[in-house]
Image 1: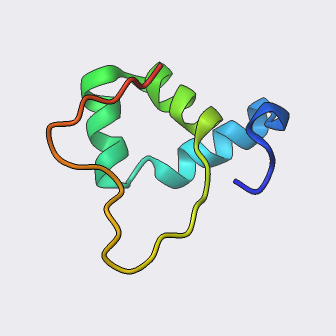
Image 2: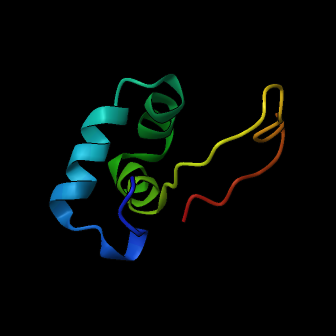
Length: 66
């Protein structure tokens, strides 16, 4: 995830997909939205640091995966 998202190659995305396929959030995405959405998320995912107890997103907020 250290590569800029625009510089990611198919191999990089495949590695991210493999690394995230067993994460509960991504399992739900794969089950409900399919592998294409999972691929798109892995193309665009970014690593960020948050402070302890900082909210990433709240339940009920609609997220546009595409």
